[in-house]
Length: 202
Image 1 (cartoon, rainbow, N blue to C red):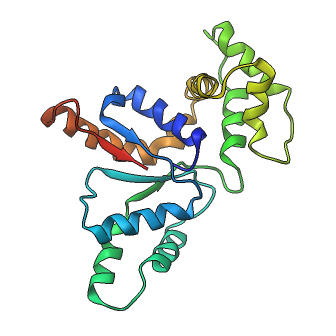
Image 2 (spheres, rainbow, N blue to C red; image 1 turned 90 degrees about the vertical axis):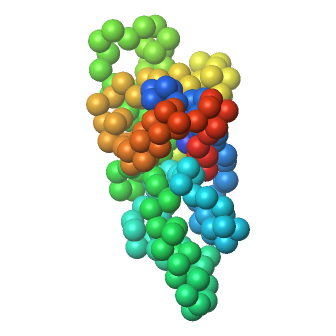
């Protein structure tokens, strides 16, 4: 995961799948680091069947961009290099952002357009604070300024924001690439492994 916003999104996905106890989450910082970490994992010969690397979706969003990034970390013409590249394909997933939109900006859009029916005051105050934010030059402020205005600490604030964003009809499409990979893997873990075994989300 790139940052704490992405971690909050994954935590929401895991919670909705009743899978939190089966998932370990690691942050790696810049999106390019995902490819380096994936390469090192493969070179070590680690099992990738229960590991996934997730991008925010605003960089390396096409398969060609991902392939070019993998080409940078897997260099050489040996047959093993090609085998490693092939093994890496499909192990980096992303959230489905609209073109040209940053993650924080899109989450802001979701929470300001979520259906209001049945929402409690704890959600309505987030929507009200979000609607006061129009345009931010720094996309991070679309969420940070909401939490600052409401005086909410960041970890619990991000949890509340994701709970709210997940009520928007577009949420499922936004997280579908990750959910589609995670759901069968976690279901398999639930059936065959004790609770202390996990899947790694990076």
